Length: 304
Image 1 (tube, one colour):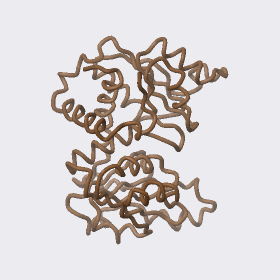
Image 2 (cartoon, rainbow, N blue to C red):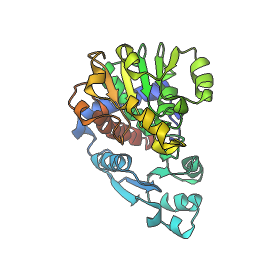
Image 3 (cartoon, rainbow, N blue to C red):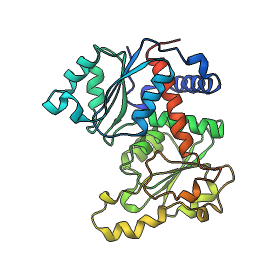
């Protein structure tokens, strides 16, 4: 039995296999409509979620399976003080696979060690969100046809953004990927990622505060929210936030085949006017996330 807690739990070959399966699901949905007939997915969401929870549920339903679970901690015995270990042991008596989101870093890892069925980390605090990274990778694959040889701009909250950290880790296993790190000084990428991942891997990267200056060289622009709650005073937030609001005007010098991505939810950092730009891919990411979760469920359940 195998779980998925961190994107690095998957090898490059396994990611390629998941992408091939997702591509086949997109091309031949009827072929997969009964693959998980009689199987049950439990969604244990100890904190609110829209896209991730509904994506997992849609994925299992489209595979012909069933879904049980809860969408907030107060709906579970956690409200009575039950431990994660006991909750997971109980639920694994009822389900064939578990998708779990928890506000505490490491909670899904603990759960995977106590569960009798595979556990998928659907987000643990500011730590990991591997299935979002799978959605990101399928989006890049569908838009660019490759991972190597790309210049990837990451913009916004690079300090606390778990999706940014996971995507850098995933892309660091491919050749000739160049990173442009665009953020205010208060929210730069943590030193340990720059040292342990980028510098150790020999990757080209540079840091800047100027999104528009970096724009012409980017193949991928991965936007994230600059979080007001991370600033110690409102004046600093107000001074910086407008630098990272993507508008059509800021795309004037961008490549015609730029892929604009965002893990969502967005809170004003991409204006609605950008949505009609053919380079906007963030809602495609949502759809691709469902297909990659379908492929992942099939892999972990060892369904041919």
